[in-house]
Length: 25
Image 1 (cartoon, rainbow, N blue to C red):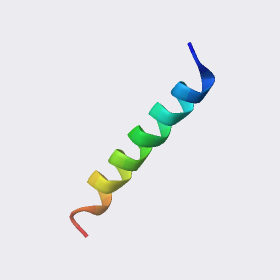
Image 2 (cartoon, one colour):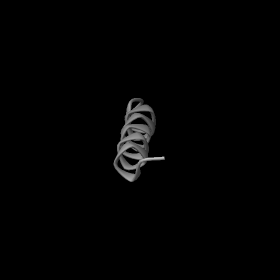
Image 3 (cartoon, rainbow, N blue to C red):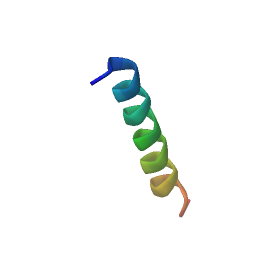
């Protein structure tokens, strides 16, 4: 697996998670 792709996926996942967590506030 490509490291760049893995990093991109992790970053997108983290951004989505942060958005979901910060949405109620």
